[in-house]
Structure formats: C-alpha cells, structure tokens
Picture (cartoon, helix red, strand yellow):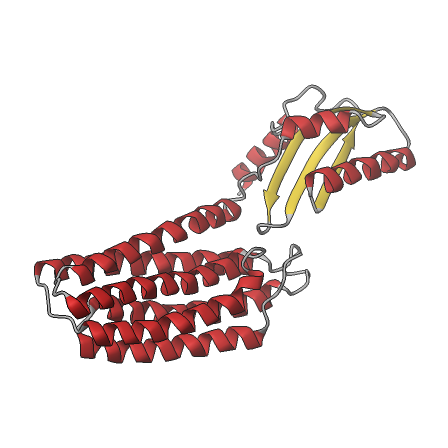
Length: 306
C-alpha cells in the first residue's frame, strides 16, 4: 500500500529547504566556499522539486474518468522523472564549476563553512525523516527524498572539508568535495530516470511470462495462451491482457474460467488490471507476444485510409 505523505509534511520540508538555501548562500559568500554555494543552489532546486512532488501526488490520487480511463497515476512518474533530471543537471553544473575552481583555487574560511554546513545537515536530516515513510512505496516521493538525502550527504562532506580547512590550507579540497557530491547525486538519480522511462515507454514488467502461460493452461478449459501484453501505470500497478484458446463453451462457463485466471494473475503475480479474450481456434499455437494477423491487417488498412 502506497503511504501518502501529507501536505503538512511537504510544506515543512519546503520551508526547511528555503531556510537552508538562505543560510548557505550567506555562508558561502562569507566563506568563499563553492561547495557551500553549490549546496545552496541544490537546496533551492529541491524546494521546487518538493512542491512538484506534492502536487503530482495529489493529482495521482484522482479517480479514473472519461478523460483518463487509467486515472492520473502517471503524474507521479512524470514528477519523479523531472526531479531526477533536475538532480542530474545540478550534478553536471556542479562538476563544471568545480573544475573551473580547481584551476583558480581560492582561500576558504573553514570555520564559517563548517558551522553553516552543520545547520544544513540538521535541517536536511529533519526533512529526510519527514519524507522517509513514503520513500519506499512511491518513485515520486523517493525522488524527492533522494534530493533531501543527497543534500544531507553533501552537508557531511562540507563539514569534513570545513574541519580540515580550519586547520590546514588545502585550496583544492573544496572543489574536490563538490565533484564527489555531484557524482553521488548523479549516481542516485540515474536508476530512477531509468525506471521511470521504462514505465513511460510501457516496457514489460519483470514477470515470468512462460510460467504465467503454464499456470493459465492448468485451468480446466484453457488450451493455449497468446497475444499477451503487459505494462505498468506506475511502479505498483501492472496491466495485463491475453487471448485464451478455450473449449467451445457457453459464455457463462467462460466467465468461470475468467474468474479462475484472474485469481491466479492477481494472487500469484500481483497484477491489478486484467483483460481477457476467449477464442476457440483463432490464434491457436501462436507465440505469446505475436500480434494476430487480422489485427496487423486492420492496423495496416487504418494507416492507408488516414
């Protein structure tokens, strides 16, 4: 069950991020730390991402209707993708700025850098705690949670850098820390981008299709399975359709077969939305994922006419 994050929590996290941003911009300018300034801009982006994540969650919870017969769950997937791309862009920008700083090192006030980073770390951990509950069940919340968590990690890196720079003048340390944080941000964002793109491209979920076909053919009255399609609305809801070659039965008997097949697909494979089509001889012995010849002809004729 997807545990929704309340609007109050999203608001609290947003306010915390705005506070961190203001404190770190001031601290970054006073200390001369690129790592601190980059973390400030990262937090500024997070504020936008958190707001986007909240509205996507609200939209995603709306019911199906005539306009969107599968509902609005993809809104959260789009939000997760957008947030992850923002993380990736921030990471590339930070690396570019850090490389430039390596060529022109500046003196850093380690004490200011350390104190401001500690404030940021406390606020980021508070934000992460508020979002943690829903981060396991929603890619949207997970993307927002990773924004905040990556900020906490960068704050730790800045604190360590601040401690070192307080006692030792190491001009290259600040940009190197920035690059390390940026690489971590990209590393966390890429898997979410990959997963959300797969969902939006309607890639097949990770199911054992041969096992599904074998299980369905164990149902009395089902001889074969073909024309299988499976895709995901979001990371939790799998859509499945298939054609079943059945004995020449009455419709009332076919409905009993449907109920048995649906129970197997729901209980064993976690499929939530199932569409089945019973056939007697049509499509028999076709491959699981082949489109029937008559459907191919229909598509071809439609294209010619349009």
